[in-house]
Image (cartoon, rainbow, N blue to C red; front, top):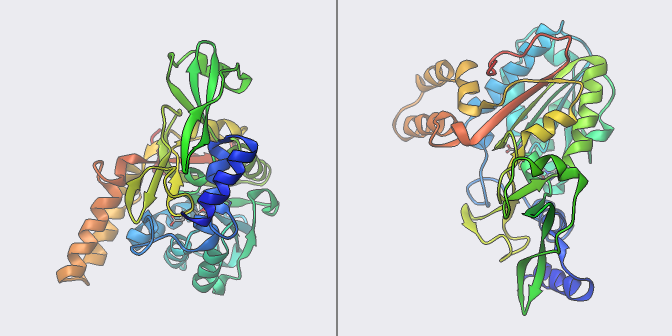
Length: 354
Ligand code: SAH
């Protein structure tokens, strides 16, 4: 049995069941055994892969989008160029390469990275060292000033709580112990003010999820953008409103019972974009736009064709497959959604559904 599993069993036996949020936090961020804290879980040898690791085109398109919005807002300088959960730094490296010739963009950019993982900070330093990044534990310490920010697969890694509708109240899903196994159970139902609005659109026995840590992060970002200008681009899997149990574990790229191997599988949950947009008041939110649609509108197919000219054989086939994987509705194109947040006084960002 893994060290984290025995530690969790000991804790639960002594103090009672823990919330899904507490369980996720331990699995992902436990200093010695957590998925992110202890290693780099990305890529072919890891547990999961992400859009920037699939193709350089992802970071290029989104980097050019940020530069366009920056330009449309009058090219403020200096400005904060920030990323939440930059992984290996691949997205930002591709974004910076693509924007190298945008007049004034690099000269004005001050790179700030919000990252909890030591091993991933080291990977980011290796990729992005030329831009002298400043690292943060939380978005709340980002500098004041114009803020252009991107977050890909960041919010899905934040801890959620799960609640099952029971009459006019909610029973929370908890992690308990049975013998040597971690098992899910339910707390006694109780009313919950934060979920009052969900009594209207849920029926008995349905589950909703909440992500408390997302709120202060969005509020900190929105305060800077509202005061000084800027733009936040959020890409993740999820929907406008949380519906049902979306807790998912991936180990070596295969789905696995989330409670079977704590610390050895990546845990994620779908993002509730409505909650993010609400926490970002007074910013305006674009319509939720499928990743594939946004990338097409930003010109990914023309870019794919240009890159294809220099490729042949397996490399060309891989490139075509990567384009399909990022954009096709049957692959990541529809599962992943994008949301743009911008000041009410600024023009709407290009590429999103109106
Ligand atoms: N954006 C990258 C990585 C996604 S994985 C990509 O698309 O490839 C999630 C990222 O968020 C990792 O970098 C992870 O270490 C970071 N992360 C997860 N939880 C975090 C937290 N609570 N605070 C800061 N960073 C966190």
